[in-house]
Amino acid sequence: MTPDQATLLKFLCSGAARPAAEKLQKRTAQQFVLAHGWWYEPLGVPDTIASGSTKECHKNAVDLTMNDPSLVYCEGYALFKSGSSPTIHAWVTDGRGKAIDNTWPQPGVAYAGIPFTSLFVSMTALKNNAIISLLDDYMNDWPLLGHLGDRPEEWFEVEGRGLKRVDANEADV
Image (cartoon, rainbow, N blue to C red; front, side, top):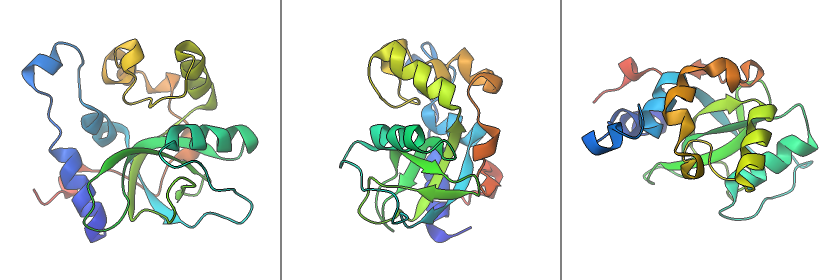
């Protein structure tokens, strides 16, 4: 585990739900990534992929998967650079555990997230009439953080698995 991954893992482990939030959802987004997430290796953006719009990572990642069905939409948390704060973020993977991020001007230093099926991503966008974070889907009362999160057969894309599962037991908290 790299030092940047250790920083990101420590952040994920610190995401316990507050009592009031537990009434709305079963888990936080951080807990969801701990339960279902994978580590992805940062990869520079290939020349065949155009840069996306700044601060529109979810739309950029969806656009990439629409243009190239071999890419898989991923969402979770990432660190832009060493010492930066973890941020909820979206990217695509090539099916070999690489994070392809065309939103940031350079690859981030750590990515932990979940691969989602194209059908789930598309249906959520249609339902919301917008492309927003799947983990922070406030428009539908955070379904992945509730009972839908217990049904990965409805949203998890096996082909998009990362290099290694995120494991809270590796945290030096």
